[in-house]
Length: 405
Ligand code: 13P
Image (cartoon, rainbow, N blue to C red; front, top):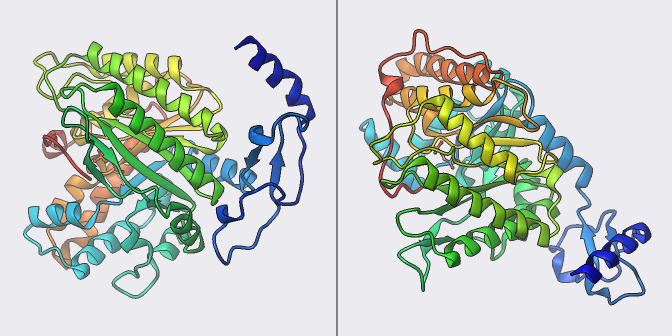
């Protein structure tokens, strides 16, 4: 170990930068993509070339993208529900799960006037990335006009993890480089990969390792193709456990995630994180106040997340809209080393979807509801939110056991 450290220290002074792709496996490059300036960083050329590291040719752009998403008073609108999950949402308001209905709903979201003041990025499902609005404009163009960066969900969902205690793993690495390059061409500038960890089912060491490794491979491939990876190991709310147990599991999960991110040469300045807040399990009788959630969550982040990471964009995970906003606000009562913000789906969309109800005459009212939630979370990012005037509806929890996305 001591030898390895010494080698790393002496060799870091002799990094070589080359504009040729020498030494790279050509199959790393997708067909049709020209090899732009490629930095090949060799740790001590005299030592075995297995130590060669390839830096992303997009490094500067990734840093810029991540910083612009993590800008003051703004966060992410997650609207990347898979067709199956979007179908459940539409069903809840009595609409059929057709492409036209998904398009109408997503048109309403992306074209809410002034959304870009509070939202810096929108995560899309593949269908939406290639889709036009109901009035024929590309969804991506509408977002860019609003100063919102388009992002893309790239994982292919969860499947049972053989050899585990009914746990799951996340698919999607096969062909990911090719897909990511195509998404970039289509206008996406960041990506999301959501895997989950279940506390009631363990979590087993195998499930945690698999989750962390998958996230790290995905993050590396994303950066190689110009997409800022959102790293999301969701610790599910399911369970009767208390907040201390959540903290313990989250601590282990994030340690492992950063171990493998490092091993995969992921550039921390060009990633964003999407953690669950540290809360008691949904079925735990002891509830936690926003101050307690903030205390535990910030302690976790300080112990595990390097300050080089620009942004922590929380998921809402089944909390009510108001609860998610209050918790975020509590975390921003003092300066943090990172931008601490939101990347909510349910906690931004719930009342908006209900207000719309699939009726064209309700579009404007629904957009106003979305803006209200976005503004509340923008204020919470700045630590200036108050609960005053919030509706009873916005206080209703949305926890669903075994939630998939
Ligand atoms: P929620 O905020 O509904 O938990 O969404 C989670 C998610 O991963 C969306 O990208």
